[in-house]
Every structure is written in structure tokens, then in C-alpha cells.
Image 1 (cartoon, protein in one colour):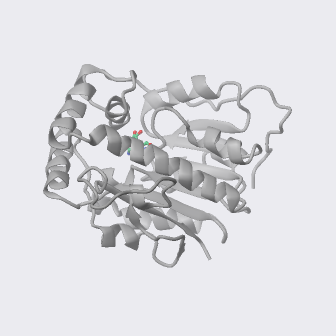
Image 2: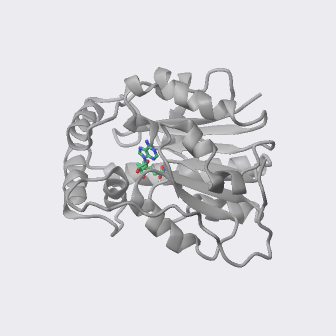
Image 3: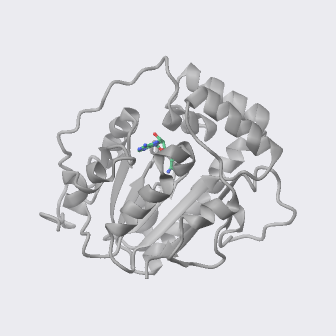
Length: 278
Ligand code: SAM
């Protein structure tokens, strides 16, 4: 149970004692490469080189990031409409446009959001963004160690595990190798939340020769990761009740505008779904 849920009248955030770790500009980071792909300015030359290589392999890579951010908005609104008021955003990335707490608040102003990422740069920038926000926070933790996330004092402060939670794993599970047991990790988080909670997950999809090329490049440059098939991505939702239309390529997940077939390489580069624990 939470010790204390901040109220609407709280004015500032009290962050935990987590100190931002060292940011090494000579080594690429997933968060900074993604920021570069999205056109942000929180990245270094090593990150931009990987973003440029990704762009060479998949010229639509910037659009792919935007499809992922757009589906984040659609999925968070879906969960808010379904009554979810607390979100655990694992592998949340650097703040960009329309972050989870902003989308959730627009739909349900009392929403609470905890961002979790293992990159120190996310903590530094997240704190700036959330300094005046008592109902959102950012913590540094490695999602491969569920107890370190689930027992983190900031997570316990804002998330009541007796009530449904929106569990978000967007664009992150493809950075985990099979030996790290991604399915077991997803299950560990699902086991910690009650029925009525949601799993919202997006993932690079092994859908084309270009996807295979990008997977090889990211593995070489970042050291980990695997693109998975639609069937493998669907298996993360085993035992849950998938929202329509199930696990699909991102532009096809509850689009707000018509999508003309056939899908391009970029449109089918990521897939995902959203499902309720029953
Ligand atoms: N979820 C955001 C989105 O979909 O727009 C950001 C996705 S970004 C591609 C992946 C993020 O996951 C990065 O910020 C990276 O630092 C983080 N990440 C990768 N491995 C992680 C781990 N083991 N634990 C926590 N965060 C991780």
C-alpha cells in the first residue's frame, strides 16, 4: 500500500534520494539514440551516428518513432477511459511531446504516473519536467530487476497496488535478449497488479529484410536486443483480454485517421497491443 497519495493541493514534488548517475557522452545510450531519432536535442555525436545509421537502413525511422508516440497517446487515453488513474511507465525514455502524464491528465486530471528508466539522463531531465508535479515522478531502476522497481519508495508512494494499474512497456522489451527472459519479466509485473489492470506493450517487429538489418545494426551498436515476430509479441499477452484489434502494427492499432494499405516498411516496423488482466 502507498504511504501517502499526494493531493491536488500539493505544489511541488519531493523526489527520492536517487542521485543521477554519470552520463558518459562517449558511449551511446538507447534513450539518447531514440531522442535523436525523434529530432530531440538531448543526445551526443555517438547517439546521432546510430540514429543516422538507422535512417540509412530504414529511411522512415523518424516516422516509426512518431507512430510509437502516437500509439502511446491512443493507448493511455483508452486506459484512462477504462478508469485507470495510475500508470507505471517502464523504460519511459527522455521527456518529449505528449508524455504519459500529460496525455493521462488531459483525460483524467487525477492521474498519477511513475516513470522508470535505467538511464541517468532520463532522471535528470524528468526531474526538471516534473518538479512542480506532485502526482508524477521519475525513478532510476532496471526493469530486469522487478523487486527494485516494485519496492522502490517513489513507486510505492504514488502507485496503490490494491487498485488497477496501467503497466506500460513501450519500445523497450526489444532491447532485452531472450536469455533475460522478457516474458518472465512481463509476468512478474503483471503478478504485482490486480485484475482490471492493463498491459500496454509495443515492440520492434521482425517484419522485413530492413527490420533484420536494423536489428543487426542496433545489436552491434548497443549490445543487446531482438526484434520479435507478431506471434512472439502476442505471446506476452497470454492469459489477458486483448482490446480490439489485438496485436497489430502500430498505425493499425485503433487509428484516428484512415490508414491506406499496403503498409510501408516503417509502418510495419513496430507492433503492439493493450490487454486487461481478468
Ligand atoms: N517508452 C518510450 C517510448 O516508447 O516512447 C521510450 C522508448 S526508448 C526506445 C527505450 C527506453 O528504455 C530508453 O529510455 C532506455 O533507457 C530504457 N531502457 C532500456 N533498457 C532498460 C532497462 N533494463 N530498465 C529500464 N529502462 C530501460
